[in-house]
Length: 101
Image (cartoon, rainbow, N blue to C red; front, side, top):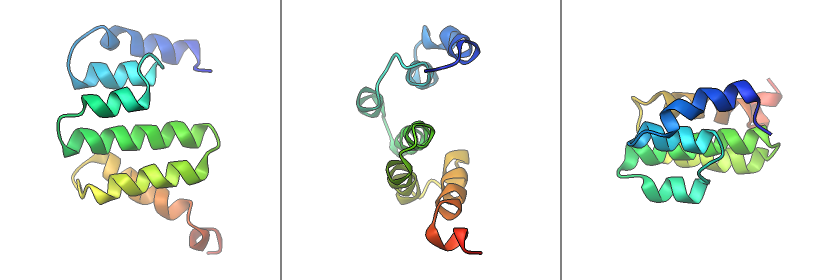
């Protein structure tokens, strides 16, 4: 369940048009992942969709699913994107090797 403050933060932009509005609708639960992915128009938007779906899966306790999404972000090679950097860090943090350091 999404906290009320978080939901309210997504409500204003979710009524607008454009990619950020679609991300806001996804973040508020009004747009599912498959629909968000269909709305992407380029590799950068796909990287963002993969990343935020990975975050959603991680929050739900699906670590394997989150890792799979973060790997898809890295596959995009969008190295200048915040989501790429965060996915790279998350991939290391959740790897078996990182747990034994």
